[in-house]
Amino acid sequence: MPQTKRQKKKDRNNSALYLLTLFSIGTLTVGCGATKVEESYLEVSDRGKQECLKRSDLGKNAFTAKKIYNECLETIDASLAQKDAYEADLYYERQRKKEVLQKQKAAENQKLKSELNKLKAEKRKLKKEKKRLAEAQQKKNKDENDCKEGSIIGGVLGAGLTMSSTKGKDRWWAVPLGATAGSLVGCQIDGG
Image (cartoon, rainbow, N blue to C red):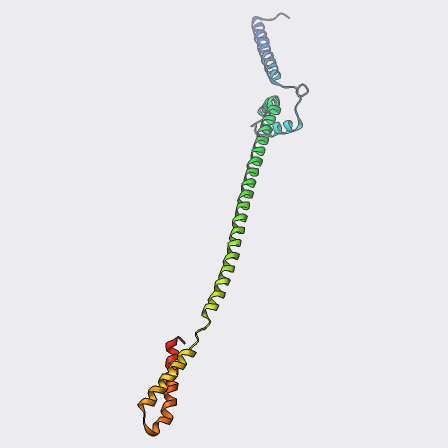
């Protein structure tokens, strides 16, 4: 059957549309395939794969998640190695600071112990000195004043004074009273 002009034109349009659709799908397929990273060619650690899976979960759809995952696989091991090196440096820096602090504390503790020992030695020395001074004070506080001489002299003077000042019968009681009063006054004057 012969085709009409109109049908020929329609067939050409359909074939052009078919070729355009095929070309578009082919381009998209090739374009998506070019960005695809084959996991078999990359040697990625299990830890890297897990990290990439976590990062790909942030994608909004399956296409972006797969793209994030594939891009992550290319650089993850280097990133993880760099992160591990940084964390190791931080760890060793913390350990070094900790050791320095421990040394400082030990030095301070040693210094405090030596000062404490000095203070204890001074305290013992002060206790001995205090004890020695207390013993010396007790010896000093002993009443070693002997008022014998003052009593004798006061008694003799008192008896003599009352004997000379009294007459008659009053002498028998005035002389002993004068001697007693004189001995008391003489003892007080002598320091008793």
